[in-house]
Length: 91
Picture 1 (cartoon, rainbow, N blue to C red):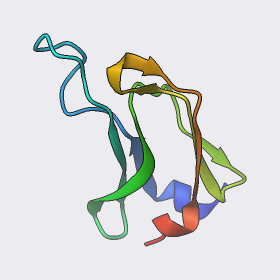
Picture 2 (picture 1 turned 120 degrees about the vertical axis):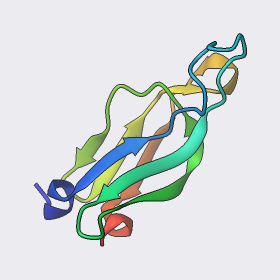
Picture 3 (picture 1 turned 60 degrees about the vertical axis):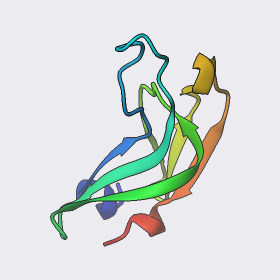
């Protein structure tokens, strides 16, 4: 496993409000959040596609993060696949 994955906590997308918490549907976010241990801070990367309700985040040979599917705005199921190079996550 690439050392970058041993030093970073990652979470993807989501929403600013829980689904139907206030009677309104959630709006998907287009952020990849990661905690950089060497800098001891959260960092945010904007990605191409807003989505939420992911069940996992894959690594591809330690060189990329792969985001598969999820839910987009209007509660539409997504078939999108986003591949993000890990070089942009380096401290």
